[in-house]
Length: 92
Image (cartoon, rainbow, N blue to C red):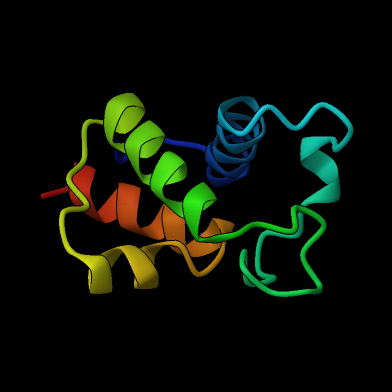
């Protein structure tokens, strides 16, 4: 995954989250890459149930393992942290 476009990956992650959580009224471009996903400033307004669905979707799409609650918490900080995790896992 060394030859990749970070903007494309971030956009792909945003679309995956929107599709997984069935959020039709937000566009991927409206989601800030660095704003914490579970903060009031985030347009997604996510909760803990959403985090489980996101983890499952990420594991299926990117074939990565997030099998620890603390790891999930750090990975799901933001779109950027999710992308960093995916890139790091794919480069192992």
